[in-house]
Image 1 (tube, helix red, strand yellow):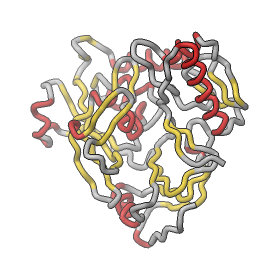
Image 2: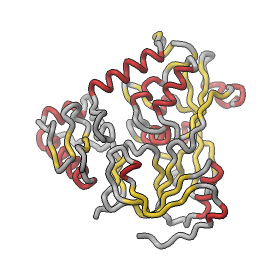
Image 3: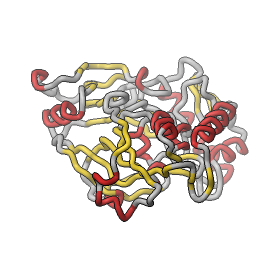
Image 4: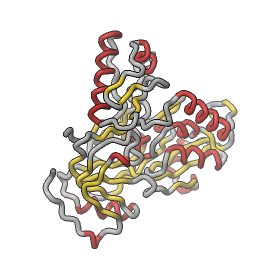
Length: 322
């Protein structure tokens, strides 16, 4: 454990707890405890909390925990939980942001979304507002914070394709507005070019008014339904999982490679390569984080041995082993 951290609760309005089991906060339903676990009351409260933390204190922000494997020994330092807490979601007036003028088409509208909003909620909100281009987010089982951090995407669309600017917070509790250009954005990766440690708080996202996306007419609500139906038919949604475990290599698909190597249904303890979608690892009921991590490594080793391709993890692994 890290050294005790003295927090003046009289200056805060959120909820601070200690030794909180993280299994209930991750979609794999595994993981040890967080030393400290903070649920801020709002953005001002989050900034006030961060100002009290020592600079060396490890900090982990989580939302739905859908792209995260927490090891069985838990997480040293502080976990900040944001799902449903920073949840402002609204259309903003484009005239309020003249700096966006050169980036917007006449048909574009801008949505402001805080990082605690779930990606599917944003997709539905955009569709209900008559906007198109956010439909792919309905199939991403996480929050906007996670989508920003990893440039989440599917069906040929990526989160940062819609980003105009973001708001971040640094370790001192100071807020910053950062343009798209402040980040090096790639396939399932986002890096703040300046290098300082900052966390996403909100994003301003551009979507098209009406039903036109890339010159193709689209009914956003119907497209969301089609994507969700396909997801239900092809992914193991009835068992705890973290979504796609590996990135797709150039020109191929991780699921195809894993299946071609005969690894479907491969199992360690109660962790299993899904029989429905080979790029998913499911928890059959009593898996440990160590089982899932070992299975990830075995899949990587087997695919590398048989195909020469090393599968890069999409899932983030944090914490301490027992």
